[in-house]
Amino acid sequence: MAGSRRVPEGPTPDPAVQKVRIRYAKRGRMRFTSTRDFQRALERAVRRAGLPVAYSAGFHPHPKISYANAAPTGAASEAEFVEVSLTRVLDPSSLVAPLDAALPEGLDVLEVGDSADLPGALAEHLQGSLWEMRFRGGAEQAGRVEREGVRSAVAALLAAPELHVSRMMKKGARELDVRAAVVGLELAPGEDSGEERSGDVVLLVTLRHTTPTVRPAEVWTALRQVSGLDLPRPLATRLRQGPVLDGEVAERLGG
Image (cartoon, rainbow, N blue to C red; front, side, top):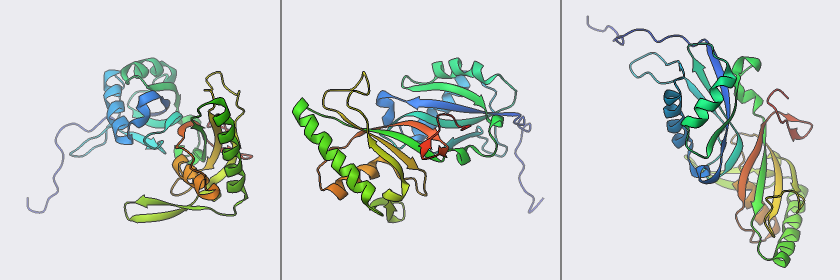
C-alpha cells in the first residue's frame, strides 16, 4: 500500500526488566582506549558472558547500554560507569567475574549494582571527580625544586578569580573557566604511597562537572599559564566519581 510505513520483520524484542550499573577501571595501556573502543569491547564482553541484554526495536536493533561521563583518552580511571539493561532479573554481584573475564586486561570490572537502588538518572549522581595528576620527577634534588614550583603554581591558580583556557571543539575553539570547576587542589604528601617514585610530584584535584566538563589536561594548561613554568604533562588517573558533598567527591554514589 502506497505511503504505508515499513514494519521490521521478526519478533518484538524482549522488554528490559532490570538495569545494572557497572563500575570499571581503565588501567595501564588501556588508558589510551577511546570511548568507542570501550563500547566495542563491552558489547563483545556481554555476549561472551552470556548476559540477557535487552535490545532496541526497529530495523537496526542495538543493545541497551548507556555510557556516562567517560574519562578522556589517555587518562586512567578507577571510577568509570556504564549501565546495561537486561531481560531477566539477575543478582548483580554474580556478573562481576564473567564480565571481568570477558574484557581485555586493563579494563577491569570492580563492582556491579542494581540501578534501581539510586533515584533518578546515573548522570545526576556524577557531579564531580577526584583526579590524581602525577608529575614525573628525576633526581631527588630536581624533584624537590619541581615540587616547590608546582606548589607555587597551585597557589596562583587558587588565588585567581577565574582562569580561562581554550579547547578545540567540533564547532571551533571554546573558552573554559578552569577555576570555576576546581573545588579542591592540593599537593599529596611525598611519601603518601608505597608506589611513589623518586621525585614524583602528585596533585589531588577535585573537579565539579561543568558543561563541557573540565579535564585534567586543562588544569595542567592552567597551571602552566598562571605560573609561567614549563611543567611536564602529568599522568592523570580518576580516583573517584560521584556526588560532591562538602567540597569532596563521595566514595560511593549513594553519598
